[in-house]
Amino acid sequence: MIAACTRRHLLFAAGALATLGSRAAHAADDRFALTGQPTQGGWLRGHLPPGASGLRLDDRDLAHAPDGVFLLAFDRDSPPQAVLSAQAAAGPISQIIAVAPRAWQIEHVNTPMHPPGMADAEFARRRSAELAQIGAARRHDTGAQGWRQMMMRPAHGPLSGRFGAQRVFRGVPAAYHGGLDLAAPAGSAILAPADGVVVLAAAGEPFTLEGHLVIVDHGMGLNSAMLHARALHVTEGTVLRQGDTIGEVGMTGRATGPHLHWALNWHGRKLDPLLFLAA
Ligand SMILES: [Zn+2]
Image 1 (tube, protein in one colour):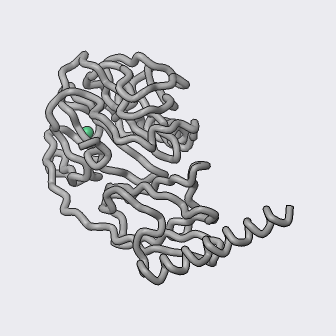
Image 2: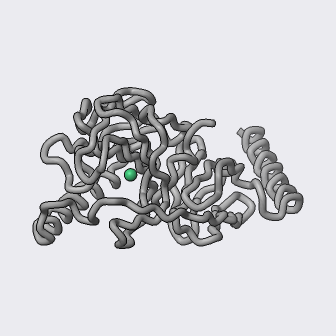
């Protein structure tokens, strides 16, 4: 018992020395072993140092998996700096992350901002219910592990719309484009970009803008939305492996032609799917 106790103290001391040594050697760099793309719309994966707890990103708690691995991501309009912090055995540690800014393109879209043929009052009424469903789905954490993976393209077709582009609908500026458009033919397969669980499958009345929509939870706050489907082959609760078929590409909702709009979201932050794809 005494031997075990002594050994634990020795290990603690060695750990404390290692932490101090690391702090002296690398003022503020790889303490969290970060890898990824720290840019607007991008992400980082990291590892909590052994024995550390209380992980925070800026002023909010940040979850980590039992093995210490965590994910964080940066909104399209993220400020240029974020601070990661935690409590290590030897005291508080923190790391400043520089978030690289990006230049966003202007994209002219030849459709009206609202779906044609729908009165504003009717649109507003339906829209609030739809947004409530989407919000509830995105808060649903299924414990899926897809957040650990590099992703694959969820449809085979040319890139026809980039994430982050400022959209102008027949001369009227609107919100930026929140996803990636892949111009795959109608009826071609929509595939799961990473492992996950279906948390919304809008197979009934198409949503006003998204049409037939599927949201897949990848765990740790990360989720994919797949829009404008012609048909869905999953229901809420369906467990997906990367590459499984979700449905068929279509043009339901607001779309000028068949395509898949793929949006990635992390705790309300809008992300650039291109930055999540395997090289
Ligand atoms: Zn789109």
